[in-house]
Length: 124
Image 1 (cartoon, one colour):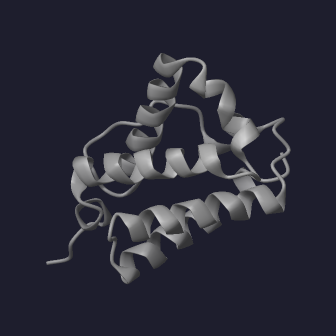
Image 2 (tube, one colour; image 1 turned 90 degrees about the vertical axis):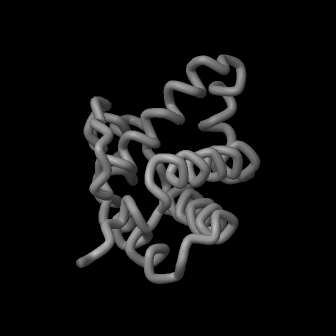
């Protein structure tokens, strides 16, 4: 029996820890922090965005959560995210997965998914 990506990430609890680490890294990353800083002024909004990310990741990896947010194109349209910013996000995801002790095979699977979304996120 195959273990789902959701299970390999530690289910809801593991995904929440991973997302918390990613968001914390984004807020400190000099390449992308300006995009996230407005969220620090509104902790309730930060929590909504964080939960959206959890739901997106959970639903996309085989978990029971339902993602009700915008699709990737609509969510990123007009942001004109650069290649450098996109890579900074991926770097933060890798660092967070390492911090959360996600195994290497699962890290590769997550990066494959994240990189496959690039056309729906960057330069829109």
